Length: 236
Image (tube, rainbow, N blue to C red; front, side, top):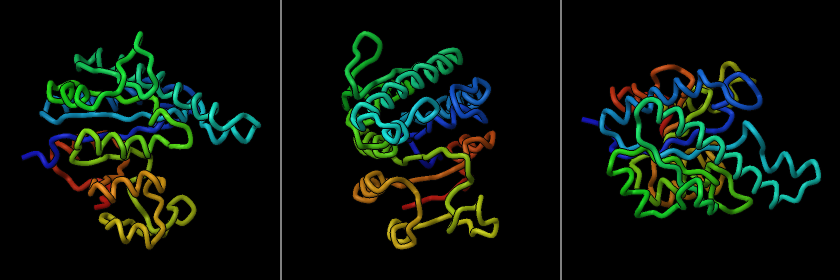
């Protein structure tokens, strides 16, 4: 018995870059897509929200003097590039995909329409959401929380480079305690950096569980979704 029927996977642009600081790591992308393919074959409906940090971050560009609105719009366009790279990799594995964007660009992708998105998922297609929320000042974490709520996902999976949630930064503090399960109230009171404030509030309000896990450990996604192992940390 599968624990989740429909999930939303949040992938950062940095994950796609692998060990590099810019661009793509095709071996990493292919590994992730192979696991997504296995998850789809198991009967789980998969939607993805992709970030653009492997190319540009609006906040970083703003620091160099660019208008924040335009900087965020550039970041949204970067997520579209990443969406196409994921789509190409999944297509080559025989997985049907659709890209929907929050910014209208009908010649290359579908606009985001909730009912159409759900229909794609019901037909077994992987749905890749690009363009963030379509609005400046919001992160792709917020876009992930928003889309997960709109498509009525059972869970939001946040793919990271760390094993889950700790009570302190595990890089700076090796003795930081790993927290496998945390309530929304505990995460708030302990000021744990699970997601940005808007995303966290959306998930809490809509009772959307969040699983933070290390996607760079090969097999974690399939262990979590197909084999039912306890992987990462859960906020619920």
